Length: 222
Ligand code: T5A
Image (tube, rainbow, N blue to C red; front, side):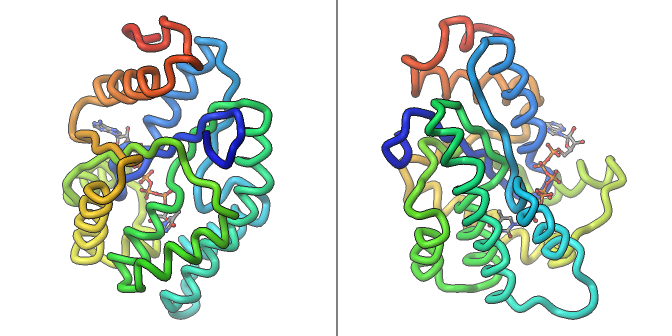
């Protein structure tokens, strides 16, 4: 288990509009129905400091944020999130489900912004104190499909989305490179219907950690 604790740490990843938030919510509902103690969160965010930094990261418009500064703001939020939320929840034996974590940093700040990926891994370890997810599920959708979903919602472009398609294409390719390097990251087809993606997510988690979930967790609709 992550960091020698008793809980399970699961992360949802993917480009904008891949369906992470939807899947975190469906999973939260299913964990609740199954009576499994859980904590959900998102990055950047999850703590008072993290949410304040999230506002800067997504909305700052008074000038440029350099990639190095962006990285350090993200890591500052992560350091708080891990120590105040994730670590204590894992200690209590919770299943912790998080919308984005360190893989986002490698994909966005590494492959997207061009910072050195190995250096990012070192800095990530500093921010997390070495805590790693037990399982990361990468929802893959084409960039234009993710954007179309957001446009359908009327969502305004944030500072990352303003990077445009070439930036987001590098991020998506980065994710797909990382998934080939990492055994703890599993690729899922995010273009399927939400309910279908959810059944796959629940099935994967249930079969990966059978000791933690009642059998009903993996059967249809939990
Ligand atoms: N960031 C973050 C970094 O650069 N580095 C880091 O280390 C970290 C942690 C956070 C930003 O921060 C950056 C990356 C991000 O740009 P965010 O708002 O948390 O921003 O992330 P977004 O990806 O922009 O969030 P979205 O909410 O837009 O995307 P989701 O969560 O992937 O998508 P979701 O679930 O909200 O769905 C979007 C729409 O699609 C529909 C939903 O109903 C919704 O309308 N949908 C589907 N439609 C059809 N089929 C499906 N399977 C669907 N799933 C969802």
